[in-house]
Image 1 (cartoon, rainbow, N blue to C red):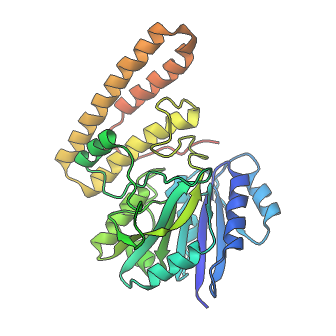
Image 2 (cartoon, rainbow, N blue to C red):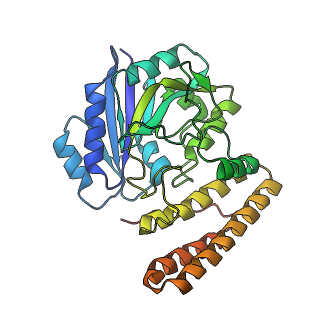
Length: 320
């Protein structure tokens, strides 16, 4: 019997993980063995014990430190020999027929490395932003001006894309072994883009199946809601940290897949945006004394982004 391994990385979202597990059990694939692996990313809040107690049939891997999305998933995938592997966010839930449909779409396309479902709000079912192209500089400008992307909207047949959303990505086991694991040099963000670029470079294709949906809360671990939903000024400590991780990951992505000139242009564009943000935040600090604590934290965050070295390869783990 073929096997589907589902990898879920938890960081301080045990209740959502349990809901995610329950949805997988309730809508398990037909005629395929289902293995669920939860990587507990050093939450420091008793998550591992809560998940293991509530769902003892699930394998829980405990990481000694927070390895991020890529590093956490790699703990589950490193020795995996399943025919199918599903990367699923901890704050996501599958619907009836989602797993069967994804597997069928993958089986129908022998050179498909991975397939994905539409990502929709868990609250109202509205489509969430689904970036579907490599984030070149023109593409980032287009997104900044044009807003979120919805490549599955109004479509019923599978659509071939440049990249899939890491919140729900069903990977062919053979493709995973051919392309390799996620690059755990990415702490969070763009690790899915990197894997998709590497897969396409090896002759594989990637497909979105618009008829299938995954319900997604979004931002439960990172405190940053999906693009198109989040407010400009989310100021939680983790949300601010994720702003830095996003830029650090983007620099790494460009070092790996774009030229030196584009990397330097990315740095210049990022710094320009951050300088403008500094001016705006400083104006708020001067005009609104009641918001100075938040504005100060935001200003420090902007300055940290300005100080990032686009050629540096390291990244720090989030401490619990």
